[in-house]
Amino acid sequence: MTVADSAATGLIAPHGGALVNLMVAAGDRESLKAGASRRVECSDRNACDVELLVVGGFSPLRGFMHQEDCDAVVAGHRTSSGLLFGLPIVFDTDDASIGLGERLLLTYRGQELAVFTVESKWEPDKAREAQGCYGTTSIEHPAVRMITGERGRFYLGGSVQGLELPQRVFPCKTPAEVRATLPEGQSVVAFQCRNPIHRAHYELFTRALDASNVSEQGVVLVHPTCGPTQDDDIAGEVRFQTYERLAAEVNNSRIRWAYLPYSMHMAGPREALQHMIIRKNYGCTHFIIGRDMAGCKSSLTGDDFYGPYQAQDFARDHAPELGMETVPSLNLVYTEEEGYVTAEHAEARGLHVRKLSGTQFRQMLRGGEEIPEWFAFRSVVEVLRAAA
Image 1 (cartoon, helix red, strand yellow):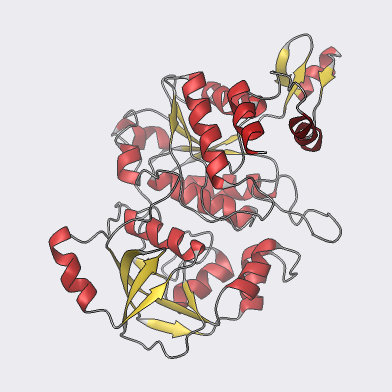
Image 2 (image 1 turned 90 degrees about the vertical axis):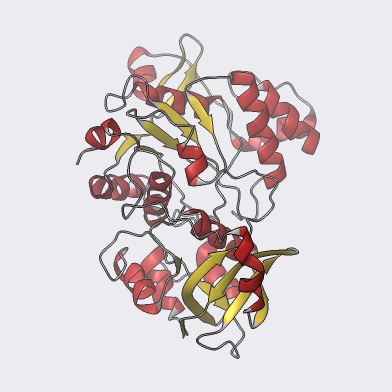
């Protein structure tokens, strides 16, 4: 079935065919909690994974992966049954005393999130995981540092039963809630980001609606991640304020806004596939792939870990199997004569391109200088300046 065919029957089907909902009925929660043998506190990353499992963001998973699925995803971005998955979803711990069959009450910052039944436990080969998922074993890669320095010695797999969702600054709509806002029979283009949105970003995702493979009444879902990212990224609370202010400022009926409780791995091609699968579960038929999406650089040499089009190519190659389509990210520049145009157009016409680097922008923010409106929205600048 093509994207157009699936859209014509309503909304695109979730990954694996059905949207998972692991939340337990309110009347059953106390008895479920009473059967737990111990309480285990989630890390920020664990809590994101638990939430996405419970609400169906990781459909069709009904819990943390067992070793055979984890190893299969590491080796070939597919579960043991052959289902596409970009990265393994596992629970980690350093507690050697946790045994098979135990029911763990997963807690997070004073909340009781879920009951996790431990059905498998193993010591992962983290070097193999790093090479398979991130293409390197170097600790200069942030995700390699994460799995070797933050994640525990053991991985646990098993079923999850949800009790409540984490309380966040970002109010994260569930896939079912997002799907309820989407137009049936139309293209839904996902835009992933983890930073404040500036003019070039806005031009990029609104122009994606004019792509030849997007329906005339299609919409774009701006879906920023709100979980842990890189250490030098802007604080989540500040990013949330920039998105809220911008949504009110532009007031565009063809834009939907929602937030995703996902922790970034900066895994380049694998991350692009993971994001596509998640957005399919949220009802998206198309996905915008930018240059060097979810890429990162060596902390020593500054060299990129992935090629500029590696994520684009990987996502495009797997999109048909997902029943999705990709929309390549336009390389837009701002010109004095015509505003935002493609770099190719500007070069062909000999237009005067204006540039402002991220470093210059931050310096101007700190110095109280006027930020040109062609670069950043006034509402976003106000939030960033107040937080500086």
